[in-house]
Image 1 (cartoon, helix red, strand yellow):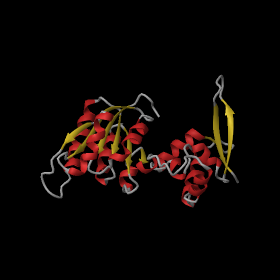
Image 2: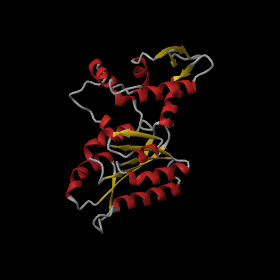
Image 3: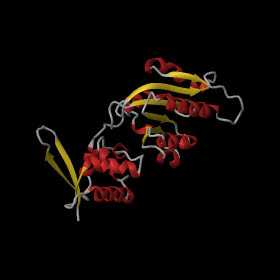
Image 4: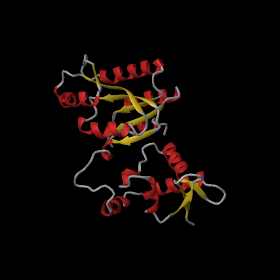
Length: 243
């Protein structure tokens, strides 16, 4: 990821609970600098009261959008119009669209067509069309810290291994094969990038692993190897499908 990417963060306040705000903003900084932060909604409505308490703490600008007609989502329209204005202002080179609403599918597609990198964030109920329209999609549930779970614990990882379906195994194996050299070894960083292109909502944290490396290590279908990097103390991780 390009660390100096300037990101416009646009949040659908009518669709996203405020409880995710801290983890959400922390996650966004992994991909770039959030230079524009806006949230859209009808702030006269009681259900947005909780958002009001956290906006100042996170320097997010509220955008008022009245619900003129019942049944029409004015928030979506305002957010889409603003996104296009930001796009043509050329002040950013990436967007983070925070919503679980498929109405933003076309917007994500249009922004990517314009050369923008697009990150999506939403709850697990988010429809697939919006997910696949993004370069990467992160489920908000995996960002929320749960005091009843110890992140990285063996029991949690063992439990989540059962969620790794044959379809996921095929995705991993095919991605390794596609990125491999003539000897069958593939640089794990290239494999990770390829997996996201194929399935934008793939995240090792969905299976209880903070990173991709321990996820691969936990699976018997793969072999991992560390290699020295010239003139540095860092090691590169390579992965290979077992026969």
